[in-house]
Structure formats: C-alpha cells, structure tokens
Length: 65
Image: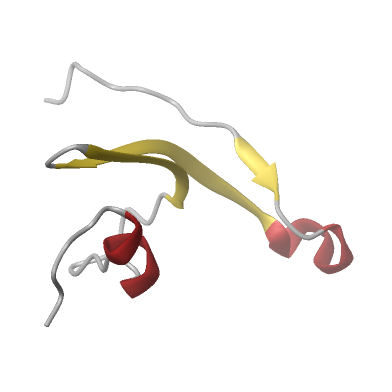
C-alpha cells in the first residue's frame, strides 16, 4: 500500500482547448554539476519512458553528443 502520496492540481496550459488542456503538472528542479533549472513537467502516471528535452540538457550544461 502506498502511504507517501501527494496530490498535484490540474492546471490550464492552453484555455483554447477547454477541459482537454487541464492536466496535472509537477514542479521539478533539475541539477547537473553547477547548473539548476526549475520547470513544470506533465505528470504522466502511465508513462514507461521519460524524456528530458534536448534544450533543457543544453541549459544544464550537459554534453549530449
């Protein structure tokens, strides 16, 4: 049984889509060496793979080659 649960509110990212744009976003802070980047990420509880966007890796100073 999971006891350390946390709830995240559904936020409107693009009101032109109505209810379809209301999704749960999770506040995240990525840290790599001396760089940090705070972002909001879509909380996808059914995902089996997570991807860090290329431009975020560059902003963190990672060598992605």
